[in-house]
Image (cartoon, rainbow, N blue to C red; front, side, top):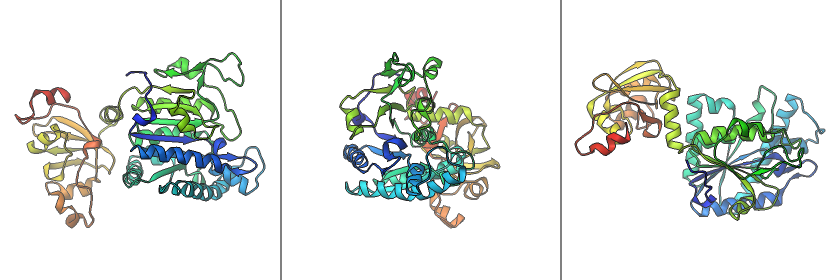
Length: 391
């Protein structure tokens, strides 16, 4: 993969992570002028046809300002109370600022489980994708009000990377109080050298990560490097840039100093490789020759092409797809629980609502959640080119 950086305008879907220290002043609260400038940048990207998602820190920081909580570490219950107050204020601020550009904001609060447990992951992804489809900007934050472990503000770096991989974004921008990666923490080492292009995150790159730079952004460079490993491994490029100036996204586009982390592949390839090789199938779907042919042309697996089902799986679990001769030909993420899948096996998609009592998904396994793992039967029309593509 080339390590040559590309302009923001060349990307299809961008996730922007904003640190607490950029958005909230410890004494005065929300930095309204800065937020207005960022929203103007977002509007400019959307005007170019780019999907934009925002992972916004700041709920606890805003809440503790409103509640006038003392500086320093907060108890867990204090952090949760601050988040409850701050989430409302944060969502309102984003909504009002984006609305000035005729953009609708949608709030999504996630926990770690929402990105790790497959069923919840798919539900969250579907909601986010629907918001993007209708032109809204999802404003995403960790659901700190229900956290059961000590809250760390820097965790939103990793959350942003998980959101980027979840939505197949091709660029993650981490706006921070530092303008990129240095060979050592610059506030501790005046000889630290700035690194503009990072072709791959090596152990040497990881060793360069230092601690936190401020009270409101305790994650420091370490969580940014962790985020980079998640994002670039899934084919998503990453930028670390300073957000201290107004219009930070425009500044990146105009060439301000920032660090570019090259992707290791494309989002689709990386994600499907993960489906194929890293998850154990929870069940098996046996398909007929017609379905096998359809899979070979890049189609989804429809209920009509499934002959029988084995295993007890849930929606979002990995299932193996078995061809007419008993060989595994593909793996994918199930669109239905096993009991519902059995009810619609061999039936047309138009019959699903009558059978299950609700309008379910047309596909048993959607093509976006499916990867060919073996050779499949081809019609004469498809030729050798497609055989090679799925080999």
